[in-house]
Image: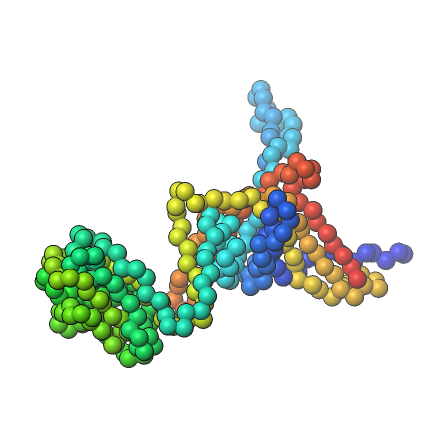
Length: 298
């Protein structure tokens, strides 16, 4: 009796490599992924008529193809493809970074004539810069309170602390001199003219501590948000072969034309974030297909 051929199997997932349909070049490779599913689900149309309770006939109808990716990380290219905007990577900042302060309520706090002209990192005190979004709130014509969005970075440099549940950092109002240095937070507030704050006016700025790399992206701009169609190579894990004479096996699916939108950003207690992304897989007229499957035994 002739022996049966070993069954073709797929085990695990190795990588997903999205590529640009225009020239075939890759956006990158996602290897830290939990799993991927290529779902092909179809509909069947039944013919009913008369008093018969059962279908007279059935015919296949449309097929819906979908790619699902469970990613353990947030590479830039997945953000670009599924959230519509490419992130900006920033080089190392040996002295940290303080963004330009902008007024939120009123115009008296950040003022080119009579107010705070700039917020900067204090020279030689940059090690105290703490990550977060800061709020300046005027409490008199020349004093203000300072607030910080999070205490996640309070242990960096000199320890920070909140004064109360409003997230205020200072115990007494901060006075504006020629410069005002907050050593605990590594910040210098420089005045211009004679400050004339309107009580209650506010301004904000953001701080990055000394770092070796950073990324930022603004999602949701109507003028820049764009979801490109892309191709994707989904690669299964390389496995040892059960075929006679075989050593190992490689299994690949090339999805010719995909489009996705949306990326959940999960944060749960003591757990790694694993967003699940979904993309539609479409027919490619040039290649006359939706996908190509390759299986190699070596």
